[in-house]
Structure formats: structure tokens, C-alpha cells
Image (cartoon, rainbow, N blue to C red):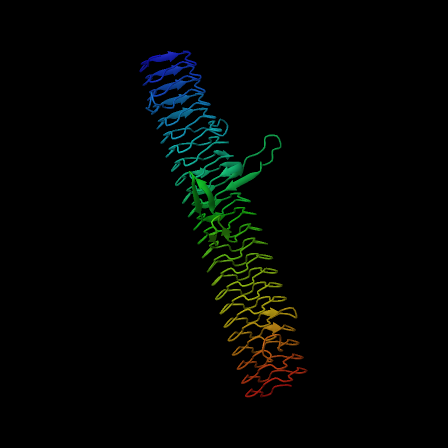
Length: 532
């Protein structure tokens, strides 16, 4: 059938089902109750047309070799139009204005929908379920309350789009660009894929779970942001439990892409990220005080090519957060702010927490083997039962800290301030380097300092009753080295100092009642009013 010119005409009740109208012109025409079911409409022109109660399900608007020009619906007004299953590939729907639109299962690959209005209300949602918007241009599109369940938004441009109240369930938005989009009051559920998407600077608020209509309970959620750009994003009242923020490691257009997830400067308020996976993510300057991050995995990510991505948390703020049992092994988190955070049972092995603020934090039972905490603030923290074998705490602030049962075997605490810290008979400093440290007024009753180095330490008024300063399994036969230490008014009742070095130590008014000093070297020591 040759192309027909319907421009500026009014068509009411026409039935064009299964016909060939390729190349036809409907410019500024009015179509009411017209049917285009399975109609060929390639290269047609519907610019500024008004379509009312039109059924164009399974219609074909996509260009081909004979009709290479994309269909044009520029500024068309569509009311109660059914385009379900239609092929609108490369169609121009710029500034289209719709009411009660049905684009379910439609193919809008490479379509242009700039500033299009596909909006509605939650009581009457635009139906975009299972639609394919691959590489579609939805710049500034109004998608309020749209139902995207099952939709494909791969590499789509949604910059400055309005997604208020939209349903994003079982969607694939890999590589989509959401910069400056309005994403608020949305519902999410099922498998949600934002891998490699760009959400930088976006504010996402008031996210709810999609409910199962039969049970009324939230449907399971599996959400992924692998390789996405979430820098400077603000998330408020969002549930992202179990979210996957690991680097993307997969094929894109036949090429392997390995890209970390960028969450630098991400701001979280009242978000639930329980069980999320942040392995290898960039979280520098992350702001997320008072969060539930229990069991979250921040350990390194090893890519398929062997490349190792250490999770970065430099200058991040996780104060007052629940991080019970979280995995921070090998993270790089210099100057991280963890004041009053609960890290009980957490795994921080070989992490770099230099300069960290852990004041008042709960680290009881945590594994800090090999951790770097030089210059960190651990004052008033709870390290009861923590493992710090080989840890570095040079110049750290450990005042009034609970060290009962903590294991500092071979740890380095040079210049550290442990004033008023509390240890017990299970506290172990075997082989630790405490040179230049301060344990002033500390209580270390029964603590183990076997082979420890305590040269030039401040031990004024410290209590070492029943403590051990003996020789252990190292190569020499010398006990703990307290050379030039200051132990004025200290208490060492029943302490064991066999073979210890107390050379040039100031022991003025110290109490060594019942202490074992066999083989100890006190040459040059000041023993004014010392009790032996």
C-alpha cells in the first residue's frame, strides 16, 4: 500500500489492523478510537498529532532499509493509547505528552524521549512493564509513578528525569545515566541492576519495598551497583540490605570491563545496609553515621585477572554505627571516624586505620592482627578480648581504654599513650614494643609483658601487681627491657621481673613487695624510698 497523507485530518473509529501504512503522514491529525494492531508504521509522521483511545499494540514503527527514517511522534499527545508490544526502535518521542499510556513489552531501543511526559499517579501508573529502553534518551523525561517492572534501561540516558513514585522492580539499568534525576518515593524489589550506572550527585530518598499482593510482605530484593558511580550521592531512608557494591568484572560488548564502584562522598542517613558487600569499593569521605552495617563485607576484591582492589574508606564517617562482625580486613581507611561505633567481633586484619578516631568504640573480640593504628584515637574504647598481634599503634591514644584480655603479642606501641588504661591477667604484651609509651596510672594487674620493650616509658603510679616481665622464647636470655623507664609511685607487688632490665630506671617510692627480681639488672636505677 502506498503511503497515505492523513495530515490535519480527523479519523474516528478507523481500523488499520495488520495494514501497511509505512511512510504515511499523520501530522497534526486527530485519531479517536482508531486501531493500528500489528500495523506497519515505519517512517510515519505523527508530529503534533492527538491520539485518543488508540490501540497500536504490536505495531511496527521501527525503520528498515526501505523506510530508513525513524518514526516521528514529536510533540504528539497520547491519551489512553495502547502501544504494548509495539516496536518503536529509534522513534522520536521528544516532548510527547501522554495520559494512561501502555508501553508494556514495547521496544524503545535507541528511541528519543527527551522531555517526554510519561507520568501518572500511583493509583493509575503509566505501564512501562517489560519495556526495552536500551540506549533510549530520556533526558528530562517526566516518569512520575511509572511502573518499570521488568524494564530494560541498559545505557539509557535519564539525566534530570523525574522518577518520583516510580516502581523499579526487576529492572536492568546497567550503564544508565541518572545524573541529576529526581529519585524519591520509589518502590524497589526483585532483581535490580544498577551495574556501571552513573548516579553521581543524585539524592535518593524514601525508598520502599515492593509488596507481594498475595502476602502483603516485601518481595525479596537483590540489588547490585557493581562498578557504578555513586559519588556524592545522598541516600535517606533507604533499604539496601545485601546490596552488591563490588567492582564490576564482566563482559561489555565483548570486552572485559573491570571497574570499582565509586561511593566517594556518599551520604547515608537512616539507611539499612545489613549484609551489603563493599569489597574493593571506593568509600573515601563516606558519610554514614548511626548506620546498621552489621556483617557487612569491606574486605578486598580480587578480579578475574588477579588485580586486587583494596576497599578505600579514607576520611569516612561511620560514627555510632552498628558494625558487629563486619569484615574490614585489608581496607585502607586512614583518618576514618568510628567514634562510638560497635565493631565487636569485627575482622580488621591488616587494615590501615592510621589516624583513625575510635574513641569509645566497641572492639571487644575483634581481630586486629597486623592492623595499622599509628596515631589513632582509641581512648575509652573497649578492646576486651581483642587480638592485636603484630599491630602498629605508634603514638596512638589509648587512654582509659579497656584492654582486659587483649592480645598485643609483638605489637608496636612506641610513643603510645595508655594512661589509665586497664588490663588484666589475660592481657598479653609479649614481645611488644612500648618504648617511649605512657602507661601512667594504668592498671595491669597480672598482665604479661614477657620480652616486652619498655625503654623510656612513663609508668608513674601504674599498677603491675602480679604482672610478668620475664624472659620468654626470644633469642636472648633477658626479660622485659625497662631501661630508663619512670616508675615513680608504681606498684609491682608480687610482680615477676626475673632477668628484666631496669637499668637507669627511676623506681622512686615504687612498691616491689614480694616481687621476684632474680637476675634483674638494676644498675644505675634510682631506688629512693623504694620498697623491696
